[in-house]
Length: 99
View 1: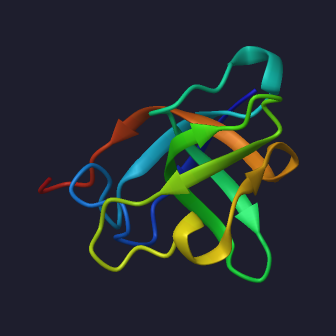
View 2: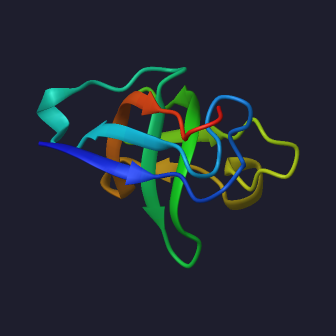
């Protein structure tokens, strides 16, 4: 299943800007995850986030994620992301007008 989400933060600047849209694959067997991939995940109480995978555990069930913006809140703050928290893998960015 493919889904479109709107980016609502700037933690992934300059690659993803607030107001951009991203096309994500939501069903796990449509994609495999690798270091360097950008994912969307839900982590409570933070909510929905977009980050880049920095490292994946040997069993593939948890990963370290990082943002590229100077004020990014990521695994350095809240620890690893678990596979069950992943909403989807970003396939494509649609830049907002003016980007």
